Length: 289
Ligand SMILES: [Fe+2]
Image 1: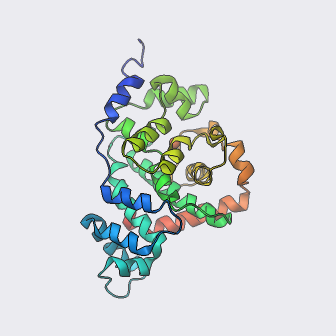
Image 2: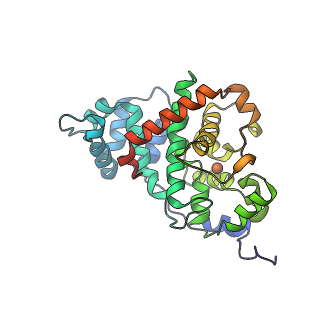
Image 3: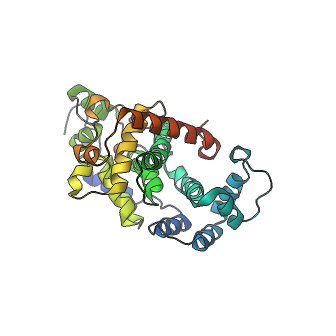
């Protein structure tokens, strides 16, 4: 291949490189497996966290944070789970575990490294917020799947060292979605690559599915609540100030998903407001400042 894009890696070169990407901590994978079951036991969650000193200290720091109304010292994981609730705890655990893997590339990809991270958090929180506002039950792994949905971008920018400029230029020039431009120039897009990486890490198949399908829920053939939620939260995150995207008008919601979750204007406004409030409440934990 010649021309301005000759320095871009091939699909095979990209696949070879992801084999060397270090996996996330075992304890966090255990927590993810636990969260596949909506009726998981608090005891099991506490045990998983206590197994890992890093996760334990993250959870205790969060439980004692003044922002969350801490009035006295929380000294045990069990107390922290009771104080914050299982939902908050899993947010803390997953953010502590996967956060470092989501922001390695200083120069970023289609967005800056910081904007990619903010967008990941906005999508994770937005997916749960959307479910609550739309009276739906988000599967417990939805937050994690939202956090990881663009991990393929992090890896392409970081470990693979792809310069996104030609991809951005193609997407903008031809007014096609960013992921379509990736497929054209790299032979793979960040959604497929992210799915392959998480599969390599033996993450639960439900999370792999969300990451792989987050731009094309309609291609799944059947409805998948977590895919729908993350797909829409990704778009809402892009619409709100918390994470602007370069996808422009080509970045549209799937017709199949919109038939299942109609995005009315009031719903969109509420979800964006809720997401911003949650991000503010959790800013210190997510290092968003
Ligand atoms: Fe994406």
